[in-house]
Length: 169
Length: 169
Image (cartoon, rainbow over all chains, first blue to last red; front, side, top):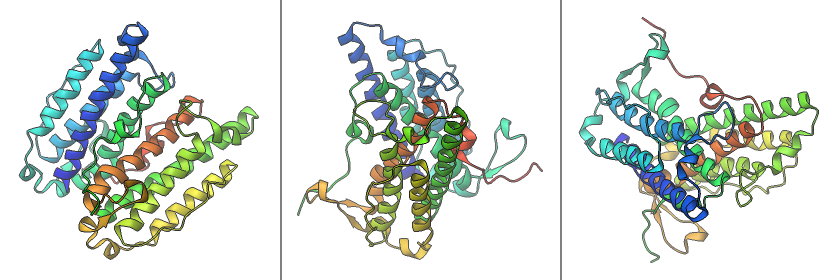
């Protein structure tokens, strides 16, 4: 189960990388600096675009690490350009790529905590379902929504990517 | 696995019901008609809020039905008010509530198709991971983002709901 769920997260991050590429191309076509996107927010008290990208990446990296008893290397949020954000996303995909299915053995019953929970814990199963995965999709979709709201041409196919379909019989 | 994943979808829909309640209260406090929300879009070629809510509900209902060999009753998109949207959401939660874990036996290998795939098929496992679940979170998060973009006071706790945590030892 977890290897499949993280494989899908990797796929979604690869799609995010394409949205960033599209945002850069959109800015070039409109002759504005694409790094303007990094500061755009849908609401003044929401994360700006750069932080949405960083958090989507980190949510996936940290979740894989926590569920497998590892510690994900901290990454400073220093990206200033779309190109640097793309490197961040590609780094997260590479990080997830290094996990094997066996790494997730026992993940469901692992005891998970984090500093802001002040000693409270969750099982790995509950942490993934109730926290990691919803947060991942939350930030991922905010990345998409911010770009769409600002004119970048994306559609549902860009969101989902290629589906594993069998041809008509 | 699927019973857990749908339980989480039910939880997220219950949270969506609270966002709708908050949107209604926000409109009352500002003395505008809360049904204005139903037509709001983040981009002119994205679904408006009402359709985002309807699609989040239907994605969950239809996915549960397809994975268990049932047919989800079609629902016309006739909602005109926040109250009617809340009934739609509550109806989706009730629909999901009627499934038992045993209903999902064999779901991963079930052959799934839909008219727009023109005869192409997906396994239940791929359909859920690559299509149903990402779409569900896509529309759910767009509901949240549209409300936040328009001033409704919501935060990450409203998105995630209560976490299953054990107290500090």
